[in-house]
Length: 104
Image: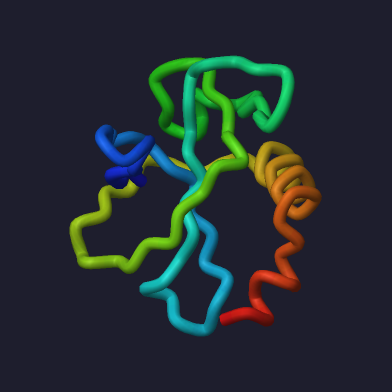
């Protein structure tokens, strides 16, 4: 899916995001930024990026935002199970999912 991501107070970009629905309300979700910039820390490589519908070798960044679906989302693709599992493990190391869900 592509959403507008606030990069800083002055810059907003439309870019692909990985969507996680972690609540009982499917219209509220977190989106993890997908980028083509490789870095050693805080990035998870998407090994099967073409199969996920992405145009470039891509990485999921640990930066996320909370979104509400306003009906304007566009489906881009789906990660393979192996890519998805690696992202979840890395994300959970930075932001324990169960703790996040308990705050909702």
